[in-house]
Image 1 (spheres, helix red, strand yellow):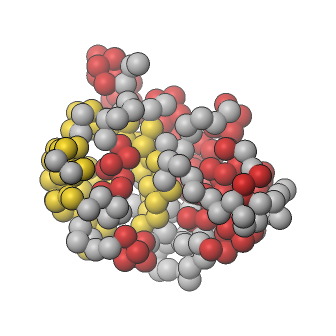
Image 2: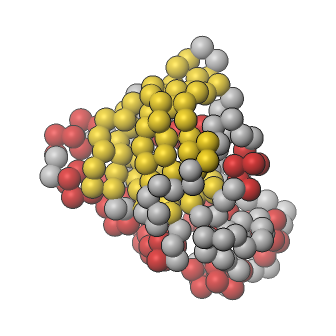
Length: 234
């Protein structure tokens, strides 16, 4: 198992946010963590990579318990994280942003180069010298994902990769994630957009009020309109 979470509880001060969250990601899978705004998706991702200080539970990455490791140690093991707010270096060019993320190739993970990433995201290849601060939201999203891939992770967490993007860019994002999967990368994405998740995911979990409410294949979710209406409809 690539990533296994069990009994994950997280807190912001006295506020208990996640309640015994658990799920698993297999080698080369694309899995969606679905839920409305405020359901606990981002907190789950931040907890996995060590950005939530008050947490308990077990986080196994490639069989190693990383629940007490620092964020930089988890990243060095090959677990990539693309936050919702993108965080590109606005005063650096596209190519310079990519160089910031560069790490050596690692065994058992796909290896990425700038040229390979420009093939994955052709828009970036046309603006190699553009400053990060002079890019659209969709272009910044592509750049943030590409910078993370320059670290050659074996698994990447994508927090709301389709949020706020134009439909054409959403299609490009879906194609890119499927290409990552073909390279052997495991992907976990948090999403509100069921249509987007349906295009690319093998399985889905639904989180609501910090608890996992559903686990199954996309087909099983499609066959349960009551579940969709209860936890995903606006």
